[in-house]
Image (cartoon, rainbow, N blue to C red; front, side):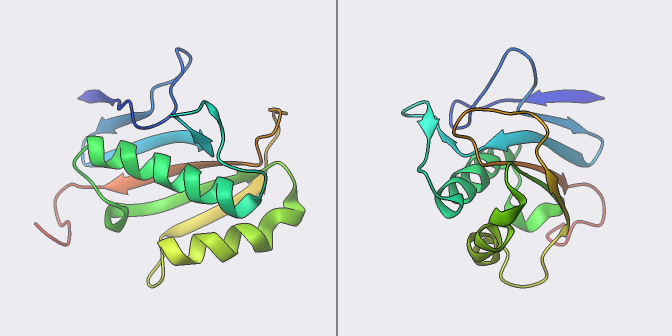
Length: 131
């Protein structure tokens, strides 16, 4: 079974679903650091855009009745790999202990003013820690 997850609290596009729940997994599309209230990047720094991208992912998780504690994997795409340390500076505050598995790579698409895209997979099925 496949359930599309959507919320007005995160960026959206007709080209992808914000999230899809299948079985016990929730797959969150790569979301950028755009503030949905302004339609613009949250700021010029990697820290500001990382914070907003993570908030956007959290909003989609909430729409699927999940939290960051349910996240098992995070994928990070950076437009400039030199931003890795700055991204980690903000990221660490969102996952202060026992962080999920993670990968980081260079963002292939050139999107003006966008520094980061973050995708997530969460697990809310059998064996979940709060079940």
